[in-house]
Image (tube, rainbow, N blue to C red; front, side):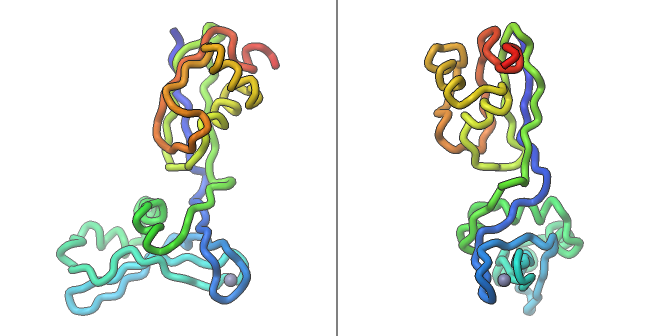
Amino acid sequence: MDFVEWMIRGTRLPELMKPCVDCSSKLHRPSGKFRMNANGKLLDVWLLVFCAKCGRTSKVAIHERVPVAVLGNERIRRYESNDSASVAAALMDRNIARRNNYRLDWEGAWHLEVQPLAPCGGRVLVRFEVPVPIRPVKILMRGLALSRGKVVEAIDAGRITMPIDVNAKASRDFEFCVAPGTGGRDAGA
Ligand SMILES: [Zn+2]
């Protein structure tokens, strides 16, 4: 049986759904920069974001009054150098998002990289390089080049074996099986 991997890859950082205090915009973009403030042995660390419309800079709190020793030199060095992996990790951290009252807008910030499945069908492992909340049915529609109706029909008929709810948004890796000749690409649809 054929085995392929599909990958959800980030193409840029997602935007933040967070209203601007100066204008009507509800969207902010990450600047890719941290700002730190030392107060004795305590540190504040923020991620700087700017309004997508007027450009006003806002701060997203990452650490508040945390002892230097708790963060450690290596982590502080990454903040000081605006390390891009640390920017992405902070932005996508659910606790940070909740505390700072924003949600991420992933529109246009990711794409699905598909390895074609052989006509004999097989297993597909869907991996998330970035945590995009997405309904699995959408991944199957794109990857197999099928309409929503055809995907649901194939699942109901047992030609696609799905371990999870195709309509519940998920951002965790999952695997499914496809029977021979199910994909639209193979069928020439
Ligand atoms: Zn603004």
